[in-house]
Length: 257
Image (tube, rainbow, N blue to C red):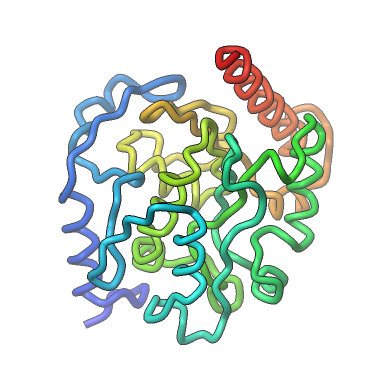
């Protein structure tokens, strides 16, 4: 029997089982309430190596990963006929940008964030001196959902091993979680009590996990719908957030010298 949102009961059971299979710990930082510590160790790590279609993902190189991902079959959104969208940018970058899912233009080109939202994302990054070679841009879900709808939870779970493997091989210092879906999914996976909060309450906050720094930010598509630049507006807040990312990377560079 299917639930009200169309997710089969078996899929829901698998999701619940996956969530409790692996215990992890997280060191809370700004924006993570102390009361959430009781949750630590009861969630599964979004960064942990997983499996897809019964096959463990453990690639030795980013090139090997992308080659295999490009030939992906049997995934939940393959029947829609949309193409696999991999990444753009630099696989050795210290900034990773994780969005939700491809849109129509991304489906046509096979690269993430290349439509109007992508152009705005590039402008945001460029405003603090980041070029495409300075970042690695990808999505949680690797194909376009029908009619650009929000990915279902079990679809996100199915593609999770691929993004986890990307994180492992790229090994970024900063991960920008772009939009509600990316932010809530990753924060839930690292046991943050902030996972249920709307993006308006988590954007701009830093979360540290295994030496990586995570920061939720508004999705560019939301900024396109809210173009005002007045103090406190989404665009003004995003300007603050990208400056914070710039400062975090500059600190990393200074400490690496």
